[in-house]
Image (tube, rainbow, N blue to C red):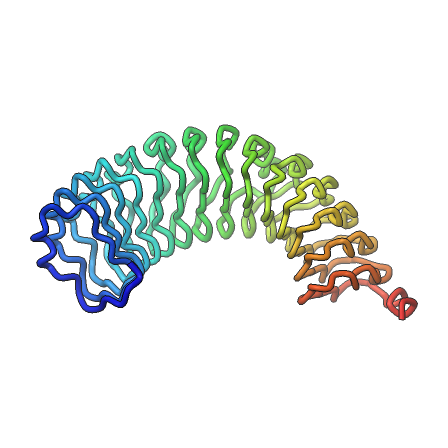
Length: 357
């Protein structure tokens, strides 16, 4: 891997009948994947990622009965996923991401019960996530279908995938409610932004309370959906490992819950583009590791808490398009690393700034 190999993959490599590992990722290989690689019956690992390979995935690769790892990610492969890959009963790692694959995922793929990592991100794949996903892949750690054309709901069976660590379905056309996540104790990353989830009603975010059992949770990304109602107060009881909390561009209203200061390792908080009212909770100033704070395009009122001056790691602060009033606190001057500051479209005055000169 990571050499400067160029040209096509030689078809003659299929004569190496005892080959168990073939890893030629991160090179400059071109042409199609040779179909006669399917003769390498002892092959366990086939990594072709980050080259310039073209054409379709050969159906003959379904004959590699010993294969446990297959990754042709980061190429220019086209066509549909061959159903013959469903014969690879030993497969634990399947990454087809960042290609130009289309069509639907063959049902046979969901017979691969040994799968631990499954990624088809950054393609043009359609269809639904199967209702039995959580039971089809009982050992699933990582599920990634980001930037495709999936429709339908997140299946209820996801609650059975108790080994799940990362679930990423961003930028698809998913609808419906987020199902029960109570049993996903190992979850570190749950990202669903850029879909049509939720009904714009109270209770859409009830699953957030269930994530309190996920003590290793680091990223919760729910932005650009149809989640309505209020932001549950239980959000302040999520894991203190949480680093990213994005709930921007939804249909949320009510006040921003106090207690967010409990999330002591938070690095990015984005609640912009909702209809939040009330004041900015002062205890956000307890988030000493916060680098990004986006509360813009809401209906927040009152003054900017002086406690925000405690956020000395802050790089970007967006409070624009609210109903904030009063003076700009001089304490913001302690945010020495601040690169982006937008307070526009509010009712602020500069009295405090003048007094501090």
